[in-house]
Image 1: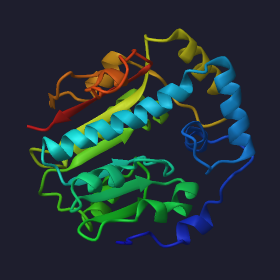
Image 2: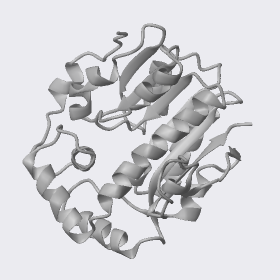
Image 3: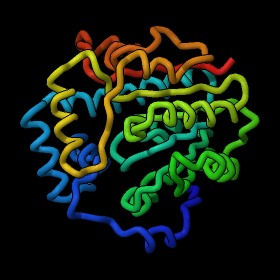
Length: 271
């Protein structure tokens, strides 16, 4: 096990609020995890009562992440991963998929949620050949992210930058784009960007449920039109089939015929 966990000081400064539902804990609940509280289960159940398909969206997003990592390792030869907005550990986390295929893979997770920090050790269990690290930082702190990531990753070598269900928490779209482009610009040619986010234009019931959730006082998550998700990849070379509903992105042959949902994503190479 390679353990580069941050010190417990940030945890002491930011207590976990169990009185307000939290998106990462609700997502964990929908994925079948146990790192959540009754308030999260109540909010999750209220959401699924309006839109049961959210569980499919959560699991399809995680499946897309796994397939994209498999492509990065097996076809693109990438061995370094920077996962920003990690969320709570569940099943098939980035390091588990990458190191299963290439044990020498090195992974850095980034989040600033105190509950994620509390469970960081589950994200830091690494193969002996590779390494994992956890950075306690906000996605609004690119310089801090890059400086801390450089302690584990060689940022002169191709690196996969991952945003999975996190950019919707950035209400200002231009700011979200600048966050992505700022980190991509710091990576060398041959690096990749993986994004998958909740989308508008596919499922009105999903949009209604998410808009209602955003009015509850919980941290909002903004669904975006597909063209805005696609624009995160401007200047990069999209891997086929481009930006699509995540079940349609290189589905496994053994899986049932995929059906489009309100979650779109893609993978692209920096030239």
